[in-house]
Amino acid sequence: MAPILLLLSAICHLIVIVGLTLHPTDFLIGTEPQLSFNRTDLHSASLDFGKMTSIEPTAVLHPSSAADVAKIIKLAYESGHGFVVSARGHGHSINGQSQAANGVVVQMSGSSGAPVAPVVSEKLMYVDVWGGELWIDVLKSTLQYGLAPKSWTDYLYLSVGGTLSNAGISGQAFNHGPQISNVHEVDVVTGKGEVVTCAENKNSELFHAVMGGLGQFGIITRARIALEASPQRVRWIRVLYSNFSVFTHDQEYLISLHGQPSSKKFDYVEGFVIVDEGLINNWRSSFFSPSNPVKISSIADGGNVLYCLEITKNYYNHSDPQSVDQEVDALLEQLNYIPASVFTTDLPYVEFLDRVHKAELKLRSKGLWDVPHPWLNLFVPKSRIADFDQGVFKGILGNKTSGPILIYPMNKNKWDAETSVVTPNEEVFYLVALLRSALQNGDEALTLERLSDENRQIIKFCKDEKIDIKQYLPHYTTHEDWMDHYGEKWPQFYKRKMEFDPRHILATGQRIFEPSF
Ligand code: FAD
Image (cartoon, rainbow, N blue to C red):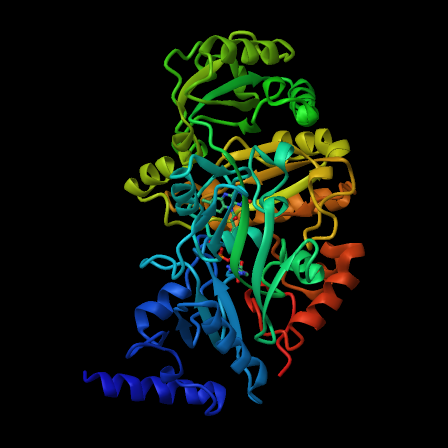
């Protein structure tokens, strides 16, 4: 079809939703419209990793600058008829959070790469990146200078804006805090279409609002991320426990060392619950120990639950191998794991950071990646983690959990209380992540309905037992539940929303606010 016809059909299409205020020729790179009504674009903007919700937007914007993002939001804000706008990073949400019903999805991460290349300051140890940049590409660019970000997620094919809108956590969080504690500055396009540079000491209300702000206050178009000298190698260790309180005691001890010099603490502390050893349960693991001392199944007698502590020690090419061994041994000596259960491997730092991608490729090859993912991520206060173990790991969950279950503690003093994230009211809290895949393989225990029902049971159990959990990557469908989630922070969250996105145009896929136009 002639391009002119395509363009006309697109214009007619959009006139319907925005009342003559916007058409594709408003957004051109040369003669190429960036505002797309292409079926493939609309379809891919309607998908996410969760595969449980799918809503097509009316159009998809492929921005080439913050100014493009500002232009579309300004049009949405100022037009009498209004339409909603959602940023989409890599679409790795679970419940349609980056979708935009009757609106425009701003596709921040694209196959053709970021419109602005990362800029590294070696002297000041930071990198400036486009909000849609994937963390894997941030890493590649900083490594050219021997530098790397300090705080990570387990998986690197996520966008900077997407993880900063949640928090961004992994085994380094006990030490460096979440990713939102490692950002110097961001450029944000607010819900009024204004481009604002903000930081801890500059437009700080907006800065704090967008950190963990679930996309509610603005679209992050640039982030300045703190860097450190990049280690070259990693000693990666796993040890097993059959006793939950010994396991958590050791995890809590290790994270209490955060203030120690780096030679006296591990660089990464995570853990997981082992229910059975199938691929789907261990997909995060590309761990290979050349000399596995025991078969896990020989310890888990009678199908008991086992707990695995996962720790790493980073080191440099110039490090003395003996001193790395000594530091690791001295730390391991303080722990009370099952003596014969030390699994160790050694690998390049980048391979360690990118470990989940390897597992992704394995699952993809078996058709097990593009399936529904009814994930449940919870922050559980330290004082109630044993009750959670009894009621959930040893109770509600049978021996088929359909995915890895991560569990690791973090120090609340590494989280800035002014940001939008909510965490339990205790100095130490745990992440419990049930990373579930629903399978249609005939097994009743693994269906989407069954796993979703189990998630509801877990939340109900916590409510009945008065375990004050907070959801991470939260998902609620009623206004009351959102108010409850934010608790004491709700008035501030609401005030910030009224200030920065008064028409409730942004990130409506989170289902916190209804648009008001
Ligand atoms: P999207 O799904 O595209 O967007 C998420 C939300 O953020 C939406 O509301 C969207 O509107 C908003 N948003 C996106 N970009 C911007 C922007 N530039 N500015 C403002 N708002 C924006 N999380 C962790 O913390 N640690 C982990 O280890 C971890 N591992 C994961 C592994 C996998 C396999 C998956 C699927 C997810 C994992 N997550 C983890 C969760 C992940 O951090 C969030 O789902 C994150 O939102 C995904 O980023 P995305 O770019 O795909 O965001």
